[in-house]
Picture (cartoon, rainbow, N blue to C red):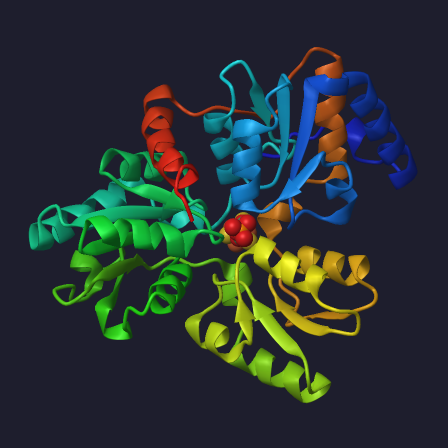
Length: 356
Ligand code: 13P
Ligand code: SF4
């Protein structure tokens, strides 16, 4: 439930931005503001650190250490991760209070257990569970407790390689597309990839020949992109590099010129020579920012696709969170039960200590 008080609703941008800056200054080193690249400009302009999921996890664990409060502008699974990785003396706050990622909600530990029981009946313990960072702490803990790890889009291939060096199979949650694209990139054939549909009896498939079992979940922001979008931008712009996030469907990734995590997309556009032309298939706020930041290059969206969960954090919410801290009150505190956090941290640490 959004509990933004009325006095924070009808503010002009000028007043709001000035008050955010003033509160930020008064709070000084007590506060560090983290922002995911998909946040809108009005919010991310105030971030001390910007990053993708992996970068923000690392910052929460290692760089934001001096601050009493980590104000997290992103979505809830990211803030949960920060709360588990930061110093226990620190508090993580989410200005939007609730910004739930629909994909993270597509898999939970209880449903995962059903798949785990069926697959371990087939393969014994020859399977490693891996969950995408875009999942809730309960599922991360599930994986940590069973010898598994977390991955992000920036290190999914490295984590899959790590898993397959130990065991013969992977059970991957909750993004079907990232799972399939990662397995294919590692040379695993489509015949060795099976989809577990938790809404069907026994996962709705056959798993005997599978090496990688992927959960039937998706990010609507990236699943929105189609091969038709790729065809249309190529027709309109001719010689243009199509670059997409690996949460996009396999056909889109294969039709694109390049694919990679949010930070990969950012680096690729940033480091390209002036005059380069890109059609980018990821969240629209990030694409719009790339276009603004690199005016010597052409950057167009492959199509407009917005993450509503990211959009929930507004500058109004940020102001409310900061001014509340000045008054000695905390809004949007993110906590994770201790036993969940302990096992989820095991899975997170396995990812963070992995040599790529
Ligand atoms: P990355 O930050 O890992 O690229 O993930 C993209 C995403 O969907 C964030 O919610
Ligand atoms: Fe979730 Fe997709 Fe939004 Fe990321 S972009 S928060 S995965 S819905």
